[in-house]
Image 1 (cartoon, rainbow, N blue to C red):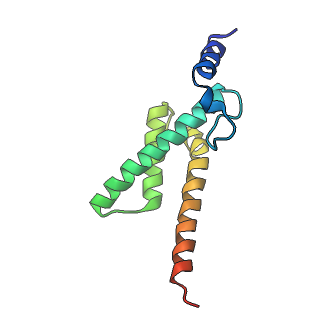
Image 2: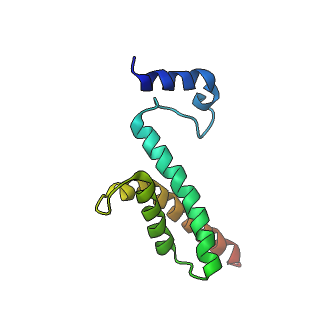
Length: 117
């Protein structure tokens, strides 16, 4: 058994609640390096986005494209990727799609509540 497998099996044994399917955020597949990289990238981007969004707001320079570009650059640095690497964009895709959907839902709900019948 590989060292990675030993660690993931130990994690399952000590934290079984993370694998229970009734929880929306449960781990439904086996843990792999690929899964860990995507989970790390998504969580890191979420934290960076919140931090940088606040900094942009305080500076009076709110621009979603600017925030996302900055988040991708920070992820590139933390992940150790070169400036030419496409990896930050690949890992950012899921996060950016979620943020876009959240924005669309806010606009939709805002419009829906402002419409009078």
